Image (cartoon, rainbow, N blue to C red):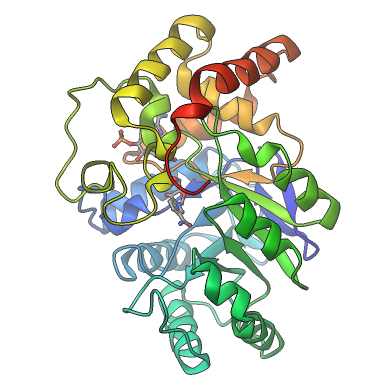
Amino acid sequence: MKINKLGSNALPVSEVGLGCWQLGAEWGVDFDKGGAEAILQAAIDGGVRFFDTADVYGNGKSERFIGDFLASAPKASTGLLSPHGDKNPVTVATKYGRNGGIYPDGYSWDGIRWAIDASRERLQTDMLDLLQLHCVPFAILKGGKVWDWLQRLQSDGWIKGFGASVETVEEGLFCLEHEGMQSLQVIMNVMRQKPLEELLPKAADKGVGIIVRLPLNSGLLSGKMQVDTAFAKTDHRNFNRDGAAFNVGETFGGLPFEKGVALAQQLKERYTSSELSLPQLALRWLLDQPAVTTIIPGASRPSQAATNAAVAKLAPLSEETHAELSRFYQSEVAAHIRGPY
Ligand SMILES: NC(=O)c1ccc[n+]([C@@H]2O[C@H](COP(=O)([O-])OP(=O)(O)OC[C@H]3O[C@@H](n4cnc5c(N)ncnc54)[C@H](OP(=O)(O)O)[C@@H]3O)[C@@H](O)[C@H]2O)c1
């Protein structure tokens, strides 16, 4: 597994990370400690050294699982000791801004200190590796105070660095203008390619790392979904399918579900083979993008975390396949994406 350096702090992150929203149980599966540990361990065994979480995932549950897992893992002075003996440390990124009723306008210095202290306690560390603003409203980003708070948390030694998770290219470009930004987290995948046009080149110019979420478009790019696939009541792929609870782009990348299923089927027929499955194609496409620092596929079971990590071992896609996937997106997909993007 390749270890990349994120931002000017050069935080070490594996090119394939693990998204840990699922561990907080909002996807319908209520993980117990053993279930969560099995997913985290499968990722570690596959070479993953980057976990993405948030205080809001299960109201701290996801952070607590990660904190307990890392605290009980065999340690070397430089970090977690994998079964294969390497000593690459695990970097953990968390987020602030969507928990405890503060969204959309309850942000304050006292509030952020309280929240970060709670994340430190759950993650069992004095200094968070990376704190990301969690899709806070554009008005709050523009208000400016939140950037001062992040700088202060850093100079107080509570966080090593900070970044932002955003929903639109416009927000991303705005965040890139701020001093000290280490990372930008964006929604991007074969079915959502807009960040490639302007945002990623600009981030690369500024030395800001890119963390890609929804690399499988909420699982659409697994290729296993049918129009009648049912999701649990508490799974956002049920209740936020059309953006009823939060930005529609966070669920299936903003595509209407039936359209997304049909597009995934087309991709499968045209570009996959017995050697390359649809999720492998989708993740490899992202790893081939030079401005991407790490991708954070979520996993609902250990085998998914293992399969996703193993994509790092696959050969890059050909230039021809990249060109075709770009044309496919422009001609078949882009017009169907809903919501601010
Ligand atoms: N606002 C934000 O900052 C924000 C928002 C969303 C997500 N995130 C972060 O980004 C991470 C990733 O995004 P995401 O989890 O929403 O979407 P994703 O990674 O595109 O999709 C994850 C889902 O795809 C399915 N899957 C994963 N690997 C698979 C495989 N190898 N084969 C078949 N199916 C597979 C699983 O669902 P099933 O098995 O249930 O089908 C899994 O729950 C999250 O965990 C979270 O850490 C951040």
